[in-house]
Structures are given as C-alpha cells and as structure tokens.
Image (tube, rainbow, N blue to C red; front, side, top):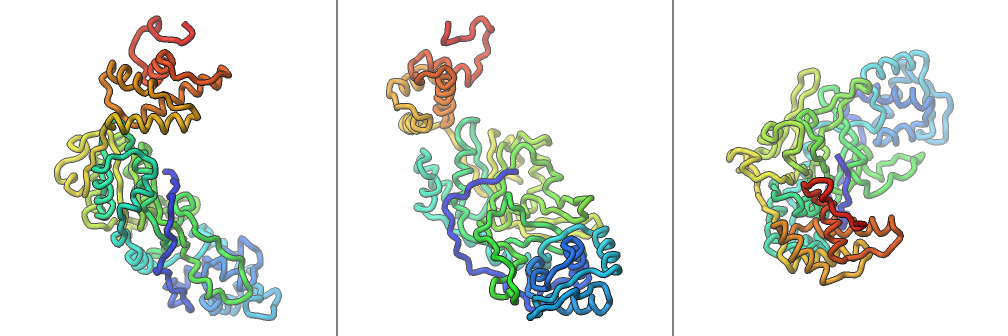
Length: 444
C-alpha cells in the first residue's frame, strides 16, 4: 500500500465528534480504561493527571473517578501533588506493576483511548462520501495539465459524483494509473478518523499515518482540562486515499491480528472509509482476479463489510469508499455479468488523438528539460508508431525522451532528438525481439 498527494484540499467540516465529559459518555468499558491507564503508567513511570488524560485523548473528568478508584485499591499512588487536579502525579505501586504486567500480557496497545464501534459507525455516516459533489471546475483543477479528451472528462466527473465504484480499463501505457492519481485530488474535505475502535473487549487500530494525512498538529499538553480542544481520540485528517496493487491478497482485506502486540490492525478498505481506494493493476495479483473480486461483491452492493475477531465474534463496519479499479484486462475477463453490474462505471481509457499526443510530447520535452522539436514528434508518430502499428499511448513520449536525457547525462553532452537517437531509445523501451547481432547502437 502507498500514500499519495491529494493536491487541493478543502479543510472545512461540520462533523467534529462531541468530546465526552464522563466515562459513560466516552462509551468506554472501565476495565479497558484501567488496563490502558496501567500500560501508560508502566511505560512512562510517573505522569501528572493532566498529561495522562492528554495521552488518552480525553478530558481529565473522564478518567479522574477511575484514578481515584485505583488509588483506593492501592494500584496507583500519588508521589506529589500540585496546585490543580491536573498537576497531581500518579505512579504504579508494586501491586500496580503486577497488574500492568497482566494488562500487557492481554494487549500491548498504548495510545489514545479507543472509541466504541457505535460511535465509529455514526461518525462515518456523518462524513460519508455519498454527500460529495464534483463539478467541472474541480475535476479540471484535479486533472491539471493532463491531456484528457472532453468526453472522458465528462465520464470521469459523472462516475465520481455517483459515489459508486469505477473500473478504468485499457491497454498498458494509456495512462490509467496517472488518471487515477489525479482523481485522488477530488477527494476533498476534512474527516475525523479514530486512533482505534474497541469491539467485544478487543482493540482495532484504524489510524495509519501513511494513509491519514493530518490537517493540524496536536497542541502541547496543558495543566487544565482540555475539553476546548475537542475529542483527541479522533484525528482530523484529509479524506483518506489507499493505493494498492499487485501485492493485495484476500487475507489483507480482513482484520490483521498482531500476535506480539495482541491487538488488531484495520484492513485497507476500513482505513479508506470516507475516502477513496485505488486498486491498481487489477489482474496482476498473486490470486485469480475473480477470487479477489468475490470478496468485494457484498461491500460494493450493500456498502457494508463484515469483520471477524479471532474469538469468533463477527461485526459489521461501513464500506463508505469510492473504489477505483484499474486494469489492462477487458471487463469480460475481470468478472461475470453479476459482478460487473456492481461496478457503477466502466470507463475505457484508450489512445490519444494526434493533437493530444503532440501536446503530451511537448510536456515530456519540458519535463526532461529539452527544447520541443516538431520534427521529432513527426518522426515518432509517422515512423516509429506507424512501423510498429502502435496506437498513440500517453506514456510513450516521456518514457522515450527520458532515455535520451539519461544517455546524454552519462556522456556529458546535450540530448539529441534526431531520428537515430529516437529509434535507439524506442528500442530500449520496447525491447524488440531480435538477435543480439541485430540490436541497434548509436555507437555503431
């Protein structure tokens, strides 16, 4: 899985979670809170109450009654007091260290307190991708200087507004991945992602810094109650984008239980909730494409997914994701009609026309810091493409020109866009099947 630049970002949101003032409002079982407090204190040694509350992401009023209970039970002690309740320091007693060891044996999660599954479901619904709208100006800004036919722009815009999954298919080199990367920029707005969710006594970590790009850094801890900064169990991020490709397996779409840490890691589609997931190079995975896609039938159709804990507990989570599949395969090779109906839009990405190809060639020259040469473009189109009966695919100009730049850098000379040089780079790019004795060289 990879991270990706979102481009333009609208950071407005009206869906901030309401910070809890009590443990009941936090919907956190007290035994889970106790274990989390003990693990934090065991790791830190001694913490002031305000700092402890800050690390758990809640107001002091949420944890203070539990701290008092632990002090009465002689699990924690108060080495020193301060001027405020937040200044009171807590540390583990011998009994507390024993209980902390037991807590670590059960689970090694040490972080902000998890939110309840019900609160997670409600928050995902409040900031759903179903409410997003993309207009002509926004998709134009997302595509930037990409050379895209107006008819294709309209299809992409309609697909993004549908909130349904999208299949982009076409031959290798047509720019499907490039377009998918640009479409990511339409995933605008801020959402709130929980650090973790608790389900049936287990913890599922959701926040992933590779996927969830922070929109603001948390402030330093204060001595005072931090209700004013909101519920820090949630992180304000850009709408998430998950990119995966040939490495994806069916197992990766289920909860991953970390045997050492004793908690779960959310699968990529759960991390992508309220955002976008791009499955690139569909068909190049290590398992049959139909087996992989069968796992998606229910989520794509019902917008829910089902997870299972190692204890046997099963639970439902939202599937609020715009899924973009990119493939060199034709739709009929990808799935049967029943599955294809669940793909909202099937968009073919084909070759450019000559005008578009020349513009891509011009951009490739600028990117490689070479002067544009109309005769070089003519030779590429009229001779090399024509000789090989190869359509005008968008990725070819830069891939060819960059090889001339690389060679010139090695030789310490200016790159040349003459016919011999272009043919040399073309042969390196496409690796024609021929005897070694027939391979071309500029030094011949």
